[in-house]
Length: 158
Image (tube, rainbow, N blue to C red; front, side, top):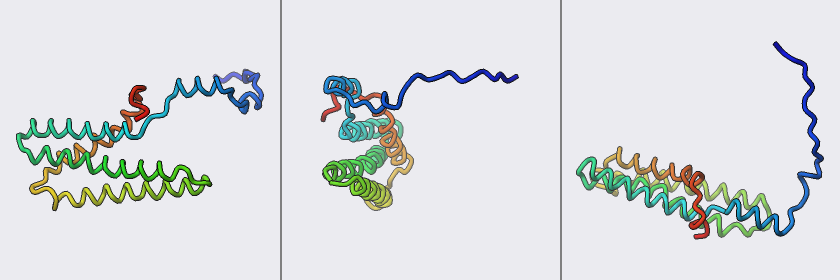
């Protein structure tokens, strides 16, 4: 059963969407939606690594599981910190295409460094506990999503 009801008319002009904000409106918008500091996310990744390491140690009663879990989290957090530092330094470039290219380059470095740290785990940790390492890595990666949900106002300017 379909009806051919006319679509509701929208009483809006294109100029309503292009209207520049006043200084007060812009300030109010910034206060309502503060910028999330990427350093908070990295701190959350490190803290999550500590928690996963403690759980791994408690669960297995093996210190190498705790070390492996923390290493997995650090294999995510350290390259992310390098990425943030690189992108923040390159934010003052003149063109948007150069800024985007810098983002792509730093993201590639982050991924390559993460893979290299994971590959080096077998030489750096004697008797590495792979399941704990994977758990630390996954929990640290999930902190990106947690940061989007939590967005603490008191930590957003670190």
